[in-house]
Length: 576
Image (tube, rainbow, N blue to C red):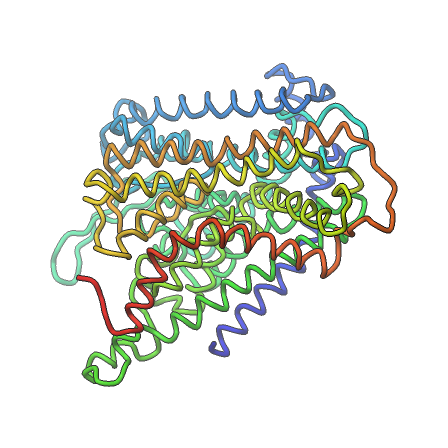
């Protein structure tokens, strides 16, 4: 790896480490119901929201009530969004006179933003009006992020509370998250982006004359505020089709670095918050350390592979003029303002978290480099992860890991002083199997007929990778695309929408059931047979569990796509 690449990665890790504790402390104060430095400013607004909505903040919910509230909120939000998209041609703030969105695309988009996926089967600047962007899509950027964080907090309460019957109040958690966590961060982040050159207006699109005399339409709009919540909330949906490769979304190297950091900010802080709730911050740092190692492993693969370039263009016997095309590595599909190091880091960051923002086309990565973001999502995006989703996904693997540890020592497994029994294991495995089944079954069905293969841009293994990546991204609620699949068809809009729903809610419900079961249990005293869930040994077991489960589940599919494609390239062959 190059020296600039190593320095950038090192700086990123150091800053991430430094902000983890203060962000985590703030999250802990917010979700413990304590006063924060923002209470005097936002407290009256919080109280007013409860009065208007009829929420009783002191009344907590069991896991079933919490789950019902979350599902009801999500369903209503999706229906309202669907209606706005279908009727956008008669709604205000539509200076370009854009038509209403088609039924299948409106379904896909409403589900996508409700589930924090932000998969976009459309070109935003020619499909969505300002009203649709600000009222429907931006609304979900806020509340889907708050919902994910609320679910993580509810699971943490279930694991750490002693002999209780409730795991919090969904409505209170969402309101407090929005007001005290997302709002102040997004406010200052928006100002930073405006300073860097990101537009924030409601102007008509600008018609410009190019040097060649042609007319070019330059889209703009309320970009900065959308970009801020898109990154901090790990939503990922771009205001423009080029997403974070577009200079209006990501104008400078500084904005690019901060956008990557902001994707991890809340997810990293949640690990420290978990340690505070557990009464032992070592618990949180152990999970943070496991996440960091998995993150660095992905970067260590992607960056060298991209810097080495395409072996077909550099091997002996290839014309020297072609060899020069790969001098300095593979630049295909990359934004030249950022280069390979910043691109490789962005690729790994955005797929470690369920963000989906991109500053390069993943379809243009070398096969093995393209496999890493795919695998990151398939593991559940638990490497810092989406806001909330990363922590509750990692805690699912923690439950599986302590079960394995319990088998090793011949004792009933324990986590945070509570016994992990058959119900918790069934729910954890159900959540894991839901993700795998959703990805693999939809991919298989789409790979055997024209309904799925007709819109792939490449044959053979790469075309299969495009399909596999699409359902991986949808199920993992990531939203990034390989960019080689024509997904704006009734078939893909419908099936990807279903994959998003399954990947979001059929994972959350079992985990909330675990929270409801664990919250009622008493803590058992620590004994010689208790496996400590902190320190390097625990982090290593957790990493091993994640990789073994991932390898056993997804290796056959990956072997049919990026692995065989890389082997063909190394052997000097391509499929045409």
